[in-house]
Image 1 (cartoon, one colour):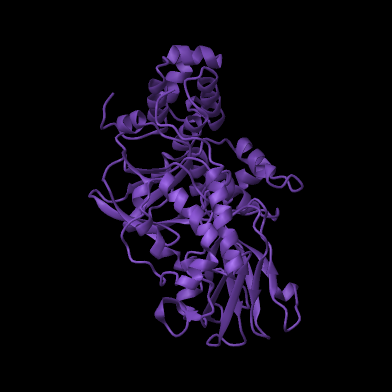
Image 2: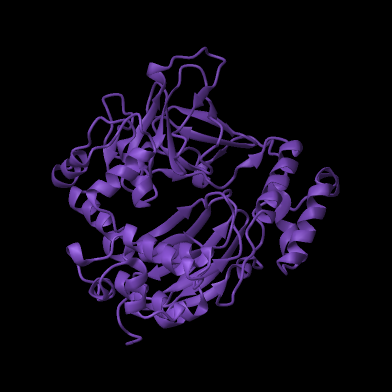
Length: 474
């Protein structure tokens, strides 16, 4: 096999099959199909001769039944196949986000560069960050971790533009080597960077002592030096500071924060962020027919089915049907992290409140990713203090009227978001990645020490529930 052969879905399938030691003919017999079908998939033929997502799932199931792949390998096979074509169908960008879903387990991040030369990328999770060199070429860099937590979100920031894909499971070193992919261990993410908040004081540490003791044990298990971890736990101290302006400015300016696609009140409206042709290309790259995509999207809200004809109209005319959360459900199926389009899910004009009451914002229960908020005062240059509470977390920020800020819904079962605004202010909110929104994912603090203790317990329990990770071939 040519090591310099471009990465493709077919090459990924061939390398994984060869890793198991199974011939194409043996795999075909196990899947009850002709050997020519396997050959066509691996030659990366297009159209009806290409592998579909259902084909790849069947292939992984057969390899598991023969005990040639473990569950975490099968998940990685499917994930790599689904994401290998991301560089062809999605534009490179400088920042990517992800919240790993439950249950916890081995995960990976696949970084690829848009430049022909090596570029730097920073991987950030909570208070920890580390810089990596992403090699040029098709293979890029895979960062593997033995486990994951849904919150805080993982953020990748490229020096220039690049692509970041996120997946579950374990990728064997034999597979990455044949695909020309560099591999590093996520433990190296815990680096020497200075913490963004002051470390815990003695009294604070006493408040969190039981949880910190458990964290020490977990650090030993993962072979992490406590001296690298301890300075960053200042983020667990509840915040009682005054609201801070974003980006060091006195206010967030209207010109920087308001995108196109607003109504006559200046409020963001639901809108596509891709053309119909781009959406079709993403669907094809994910290995989905229109009928399969419609079926998966309908699964998230069976009461409002999405017919195949609606997808055809979207791809050919760019028209979005009035079906509830049409874009959000497709975005979830296509794994585009809010880039498919944005949807307005709340407008305070339709939900009046008492002057002393907050706005209570709920988002679709299946949604995990970008959400956006747009406060509106009486005048464009008017400013306010926006206070947000989301379960055990809180965030305060000062911003100008009609500015748009974004954060993320970390888990599918997250409680409603509570937003406090001054009397006379309105709020519009929704889901999706608003291109010009200002990021407020950083800066959230526990509402109390009791909340901080519970956060530590939840994350430790999540990590301890992970499946056992292995690095050897079955």
